[in-house]
Length: 449
Ligand code: GLU
Image 1 (tube, rainbow, N blue to C red):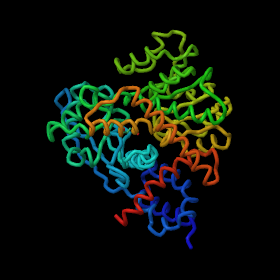
Image 2: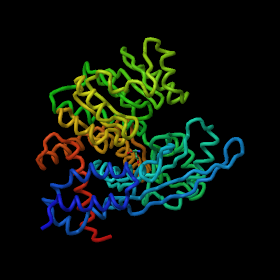
Image 3: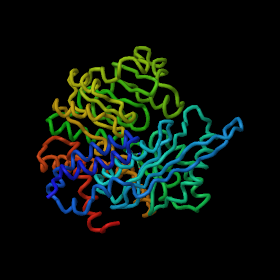
């Protein structure tokens, strides 16, 4: 009989051979596969049904040309993607990322993670992801609009409220979702469940903007509770200064912790008084300014440009990587551990390298993996879909309390799976297994499709 290890290793070898140039995708796959070995020992029928090889192959990968005209009248071309990874438990669901680093490997890693994350929310949503190598930075509103309209003109052929429901991610916020929605509507009529993260005046959900950041903090709260700790008096370092970082900071402050550093791709600011949230929101949500400008408002804060000491060398009790993939490596993890960090919560997708995760787990740091800890965003997206179908908006408190319950359940289910499969406290393993089992059961029930 094939063992779990033999099966997982054989499938991984095949995945590696077929996707050898997709480093980020392979990294995301390796992390999940390692966790699943004991699952296949327990459920050999999933080996027989070859669930893993089917799951790791996207149902569909779309790649398309996005031509648009810039403000100087020059014709530009970008590449657009949508990976419809798995519809085993619901319509494809996942964000769109506009960033120059976007390529097929990045979108596939994000889409693969999304399957498990969405399953963990307990809501009926499958996994997908999309985006473009378009860089919104430095572009005028009109350029962003023209690009976005061209992107949606192609994407709209493949999405719909019961088929595939995109949302935001890095580089895609309220402005971009507005333009995307406008163009979709122009071509297909008003179907408000086709996108989430919409503005509040046209079908968006209260608390969607806050959801990923708040959710990560609610998840961290559960991890701290399990150690007999709380937020009061704790210091935190939060990387990034986008939507996730801003609302993680807001909730951390509300619960009694002090965020002492935030960053963007140009560097980070350290403010020992605690990051001023009003300034941060003004700079990032209104002015779209670089983070160095924070020091003009708060002269005691210190700016360190990218390439200098990493943000993870700052001593803090809690770390929230909320910027981007692979922003926290082994050296960073060692520095955090040496400085006595007790919990690391991933607000971004795959911010820690595999080596960094290993270091945290070995040091007994509570580690909240992205698919569990940052699932609050997509969870509230699913609640937005529910409100759209119901044609009734819910109050902020209603959505926020559902978010809280969902994050708590994700923690409980992940912790329970880790314990059941012999690695108590290992939430990486627990989240991967808990997320996988529901998808595997659905795939098994639906036959070979
Ligand atoms: N981009 C977010 C994520 O990584 C949210 C996706 C969504 O709301 O569909 O989960």
